[in-house]
Image 1: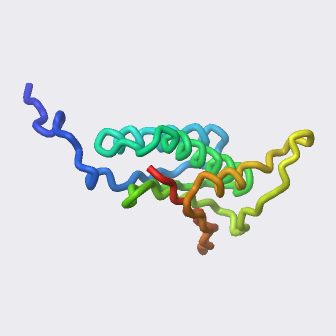
Image 2: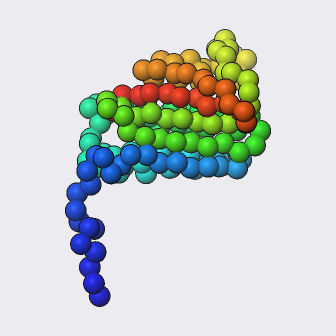
Image 3: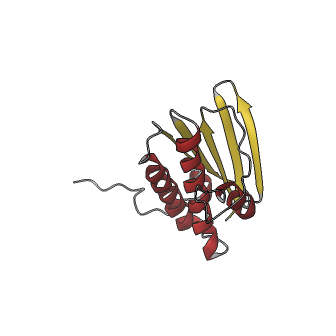
Length: 144
């Protein structure tokens, strides 16, 4: 049995450029998106560890919030792209809704959320929404 000469070779940061995934838009896809992000971060951490431990959790939390919003507010499929940037991670979440997210008041006694969009803006260095012909792309940049 031949061995793979590249198997034990350390990966260069340039080799971990991006991860792209598409999802049908069902509730379990929120978990699936988080798992894809976690796999990407595991590979990235092998060659470029996060500068602070909380960056890992922040990225996973933001991906979870964006995926949950896509499932809840934009019926149909959604897509996600993660890529390494000079000093962080760029996440793009595409969904089928043309409506831009807006902050809602957070009222714990009434339920119904209202904290996700505020949380995303707090954890991310930059947030932007770009309309597309088939919906919108939400771009977020997080430190790594």
